[in-house]
Image 1 (cartoon, protein in one colour):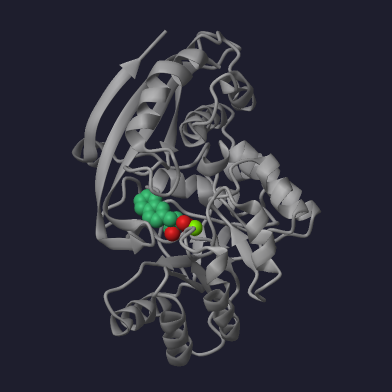
Image 2 (image 1 turned 135 degrees about the vertical axis):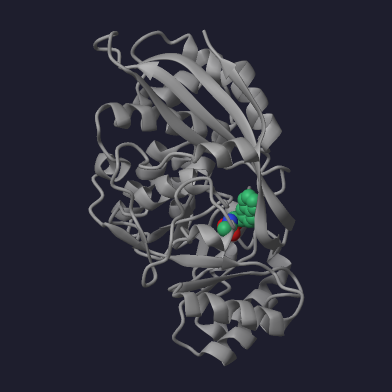
Length: 377
Ligand code: NPQ
Ligand code: MG
């Protein structure tokens, strides 16, 4: 397609409740959205097409080195100019190679690739799930439960989510809030609920003794116990504990996934398109893991309905054999930016419309917008 312009927008959406993890407490979601506008290159008289992309970088560089304002800056100064300078035949498959001269900034690149992919598929009237060759029409939905002020509050919150129908519970943990909460949830809700924990890189190998105590609770997995850049010590920890190790922050590319698998640093991988530079790399990691017998699941970054729609399509691929963090919109938002994703018997529906299959609701978009700018060649 020929891209005629790009809209770069920053939104701020309030969260229904504070979301506490080992790296901090989030009260709202500041996110960068992209809308690419273009013409299908074949016939320049064709109607204008557009596509949406959502950047998962947080407001502050607490989950990874990227953060929203920096993503907007690198998009404005480097990534969008590169794309606009590429002339008529920009395809989603060409975005990553086109942007390769710019090092890093994977979440920013992913948002741009997502917008081009959405526009391209709207043009060809194909759904993202169809583009992936995904067959499932719904995906099982898990929920990420933040650190709570007390065990009794945690049990109330988990009870509510189970009553809503979530099929898997993920507990955020940190040193001092780990064995106690897990034990209490198992005691209250029993052995059968699929339960996992996410440390967000808050531990070191010196904590192996505490982490080994979690082996008693038949957890599906422990997610990112050690720092992002520490693949080798995850392999060492894997030899010290029985609970399967799942990597999140560490898997920033297809190559990092291959290294982690080869080094036996994990036996499960949490796939997030934004973290690995886009949905095309995310599918490549899915294919790599499927070939190596490594189960994967779709992680979440508190996306709006735009990112949630694309994640549901990705999670419909056959290798996503574990419930993901593709939760209902109301896990985080009173009012989502798009038509809300709702839980139906523990499942989230995979959009069937062209592209990502959803659009922002204009007046909500206007209400949540902090700033927007139009960038053209
Ligand atoms: C994770 N996601 O799996 C991340 C961590 C996380 C659903 O736990 C704003 C934006 C707040 C992104 C809080 C989940 C966030 C965020 C937590 C990501 O590690
Ligand atoms: Mg995680």
